[in-house]
Image 1 (spheres, rainbow, N blue to C red):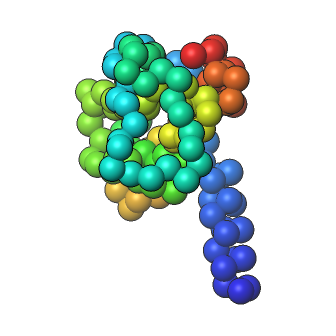
Image 2: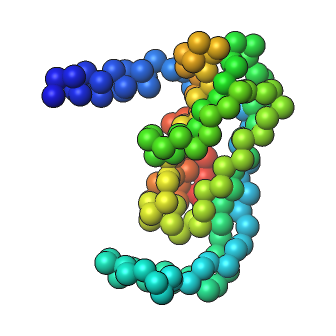
Length: 153
């Protein structure tokens, strides 16, 4: 039990030491498109009995394009986590790389049914974190980048 607590504490301590990339170091573009929401799968049983009000209709769907404008020479890898646990992407960093995030339907992001917290970490060759970009979507649709409110979806 103590080992687990030490691990959790060190994880949060690790997160706080990594600096945020400044706003002039990166560009974040939201791409809102309309897609047809799939209807419910009749082969699955939904225990919550949630119905999607926009099923079968065109609904807003969100993508994000993230581009680093001022790359740091020491940054050699990039890692993207969604909701702090699941690795979405981990690869060698290229200064011309555009990180494309497929976030999903905006209603699902607001309801927090799909991931609503993304952490992009830039790592050294030794896989030590150098900087990060944190993107959070709140229930009212407000999106926050590195602790700064940017707008609503």
